[in-house]
Length: 380
Image (cartoon, rainbow, N blue to C red):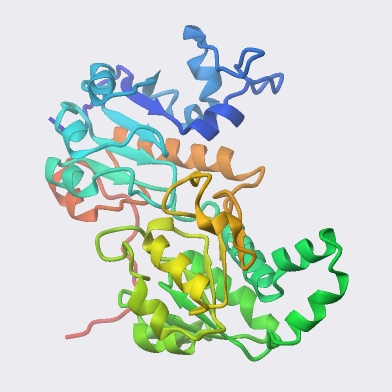
């Protein structure tokens, strides 16, 4: 099981896109119309899968047959997916350990996102299933949105807007008179992956000094980007603006909680366009309410959408956007094309371009086709 099958027959790929994709992206390329009835519910046309998933099919049409599964339970999902050679998902049905145990023929799980926390990657690795993601499709978009949140937080845009609308025109200047100018302020980056590097490049022209903490990135990579590497404790103590960029895993869940907020400046602003659960939301609410930190600008939350009584919704020093940092006209089509290419590579017996569990690759019958990097000479 779990090995590529070298046969001319098209292999089975189970597709499950997230609700937002089904609401906005599943449309006919010919006329732009969505497969939805007038009440907003998506209609199902059994013969139109190739049309609805045309982006994925650009790479998969010759090697795979796509089967769309709308399941509300693991049993329903496995009834359709147990014999599939590949799964494509993105914030749809969670691919848990028990689901993976029921995938008898699966070679690859393609995730249409940078984050892969909707898949139990450890279980997939144990089973010999390759997991891929799309780590580089919408980096610039997320970096733009991060900077937008940073600037809006710096200039207290929510409060400024509320003052104008509430007839308090003259209250804005006294508030901003207490906020230092951005030039010369320190931006701290938690993690230094693709998005964080793109944010650093945007922040420097604003005159910001950029520091970062990432135990998995070489200091030379940071200094090469004009960024100062620091410890996590120093990052918290020095940052005027702290931007979150780590993936969500056991190590990073709630990595910002009461002790970390207590170590930050009372004037600090938190920005998060990464993963909501990396921040302990209850601790953040307490820190904002007590003045432990000054403000927050968030595109992601622990629970999405938030409950109507979430205190963050009523705080004037909090700016919220609805998990849209990556959204542009390019994002969904290119993400879906890329995940299709990744799955097609694996089904064709080759390594995908992005494998998030590379330790599985030596154990599966997939051929490495990428060149070996030659950035360093012998070290022995």
